[in-house]
Image (cartoon, rainbow, N blue to C red; front, side):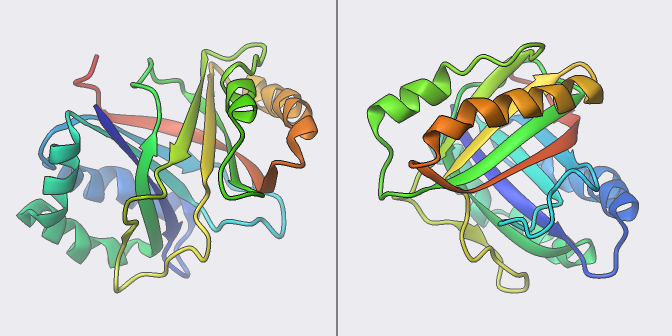
Amino acid sequence: MSKRITYLERRDGMTPADFSSYWRGRHAPIAVDLPGVVCYRQNHVIPGSVAEGAAYAVDGIVELWFASDHDAQAGLTTDVSDRLIVDEPNFLAGLTGGPVDGPAPAAPAPAMLWVLARWRHKSPDRQVLERLRTLRIPGTRGLSVNLLDQSRPLLVRDALRRMTTIPDLAISAGFDTRDAAVAGRRTLQESLAPLVGDLRDVQTMLSSTVSIVEAAR
């Protein structure tokens, strides 16, 4: 199985509500036709959950799992991809994505906590990765550590802005309620504090999850 994460920035002048409505109602029906998609989830970033001066402009996070790397690559050159590209400026100002090393999809959760970060050094120490993968957050349904595959090309669009720096690391944790996610955020920030020498541009945010395709389950 192959996974890709894409970060979205909503179109200038568009409200968060209109952005979410268009993404879920108009754009998603196009994306579901990508070949080999076994799981497609939209994470709608909750307004106000990102601190001022945040390192990354993110209004939505796409998680796509494909049956294979071949399917993931093939989908970039299909008529479906062309239709996505035509539709994206209707609700997006920016788009940057890439393949990640991450786990298979677990059961979706209604409230998500995300941590995005970059490595201070070229590559993470093995002990750092082990510490991240064994983090324990009370109340979470599960924690996913996703590492950007820096050896492969990024997904960008000529007509849209791209991130100056894409996160090397994306951690997500699912919760039953938004209040539980807020409490988990404090715990996760405390757990990551000892790794300040390894991580930079750390940004936390909350999102609601919309499951579009769950064929993997």
